Length: 310
Image (cartoon, rainbow, N blue to C red; front, side, top):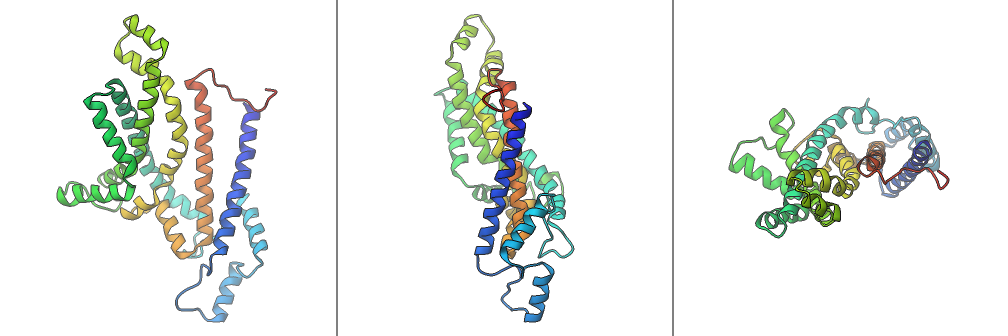
């Protein structure tokens, strides 16, 4: 286990370095800079600003300095928010995105697994067909379209929920639904497929012949083995939901991490773009590691090894 974790941490460090290098190179390959405006600043002012943020240093020097500071978790100052660092922005906005993401994750996993179970148990029936139509729509319809439909229905046609902002529990419902619909559809389809495969196994037929109840067959026998593909999907899905959907947060005017990321792209705020990209990459790798650690709990036949000799 220790060797396995050491290998994963070393791999994560290498991946983060590649992410930093690629993002840094792509940002500086785009013409212009964070202080490029339609109305040009006087040359003396521009020189002072670039000197303050070391933007007049050679590109390789800027890269080495950034990597060196990022290694000690210093993601640098924001160019567009005076007096704020990227660490401050993440600390202020990530809790909002995390709250929205956790609610959406619970909706996606809870409803997706239950609906997938129902579709598998009533295979080729009316329930199965209805749920699969909903799942197909959920996978096919982009999040911003779902958000627009939800706002139109529940904020204007039937004004029972607020259309935007982040001021209380009622303001969470529509963005959480809009964010959860697509992953819920994926989880539903994965669960249905996996449960159908499990229900065809010999041990399920044996349990049925012994008179085991339907609930115990589904939840104790079939679901436990069918959850592995769902758990595999949970890693990137959880990271995406917890970080915040960039589009959903912009549509609902939620002051989360995703909205700041979109704003930083418009503003060419290099350090914020880099910092949020690194943070997002770290979350994906952390969630994938947690998923790998959960595997042995669901299936004792799976073991974590650090190398061939373990």
